Length: 157
Image (cartoon, rainbow, N blue to C red):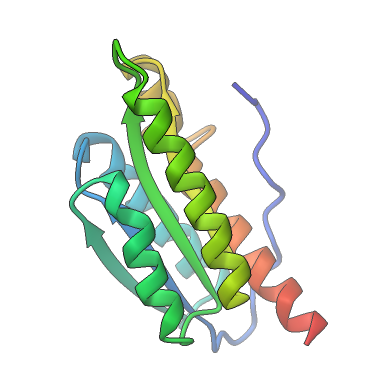
């Protein structure tokens, strides 16, 4: 596990940005802390930003809802959050690969940063370290990446 978290972007003096968080409800004891931490970090970095929370039944449905949000052309970045626990078969890997490819395709097709925070972990200990632990929380990391990517894209335009 990486022990680093992206640098925290500077605070925006006045936010006019809009973000979406699409989060799986499956494994909610882990996904809800991801959402809470991402939301808290976004509001800290972009005070006054609009944040739309969109619930997906599971991680496999996240890309469809990300695509629907991207088609609105309303968000400067979209954060996809979920958790897949490894099982005894390769089903988890198939789902994770499909999600990864789909999120990349959506981001490129709609020219909107889509932050991939759907985690594939081996066990609950890894899930706790990435989802609940404040030190390396992937929700915080996703929010920072969303803000940095949205700002970089605006600078290009």
